[in-house]
Length: 74
Image (cartoon, rainbow, N blue to C red; front, side):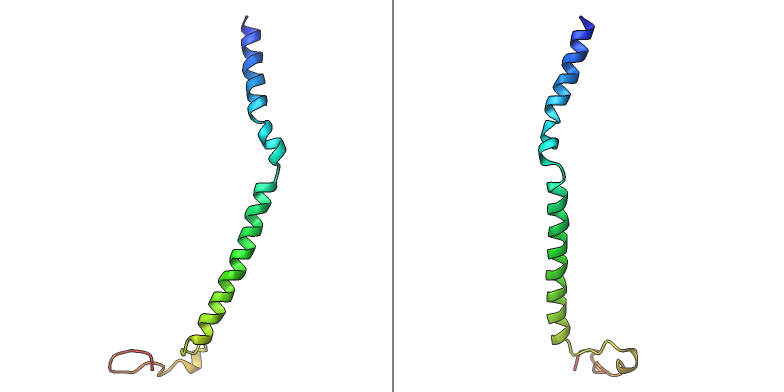
């Protein structure tokens, strides 16, 4: 009696996890590709915003890039 119960519970778990045999690594691969495309999109947007910015990113050039009285961009 107990053996039948234990084996039926084991069979139930094997049946319930067969889904992962079919999916395998497809979901992981999808997330990796989504991350790469998202990173590329983010870098594209960042490049466009850096072109619009009038603030120098070099340390020796960043003196006086704002107005002294209100500390706003020129």
